[in-house]
Image (tube, rainbow, N blue to C red; front, top):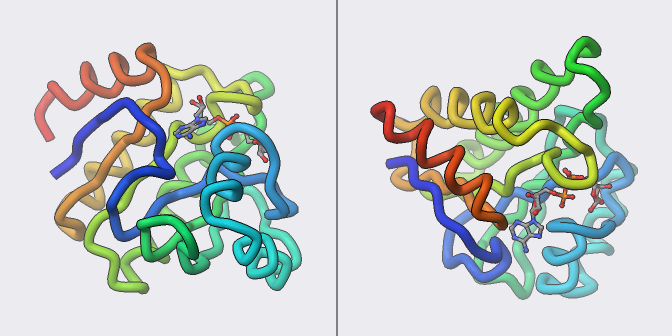
Length: 165
Ligand code: APR
């Protein structure tokens, strides 16, 4: 089942939480900062082990102090003009994250609106990419959550999801 909610992803009682990271995986602002603050310092120590991550790929760590068992870190594309592979890279963020979640045995997963904050990806375009991949994966999870932080994103996801799951 795919659902869109509005709220703080760090509070969700769900198997896997996805983090909109940067390529260093060493934390930052936005949802990345919120997740690191909530998960605690062990998360940063675990992330250092990876030595970074390329855009569109993903890495998995324990959830540490989060309710979530796992955190999946994926650097989204920085929006330029849509002509530099941004859609394909964003799609890859979702697919890579789902793959790691499946391999870990997660049955539920929540995503923030990757790249639509600091990285400037237009919200409506990003929502279409996200929901497209969520629909591909819907049979593999009991629960897929688009955890929106703002009402605009919530409205975009709900409109897209109304069009049948
Ligand atoms: N829970 C859910 N969503 C959140 C939260 C939160 N606690 N905090 C912020 N968001 C939302 C933002 O409102 C936005 O809709 O997450 C979405 C992604 O925005 P950013 O966090 O700015 O991420 P992104 O646009 O992918 O930019 C990544 O920002 O924080 C840095 O280290 C990060 O360099 C990387 C860049």
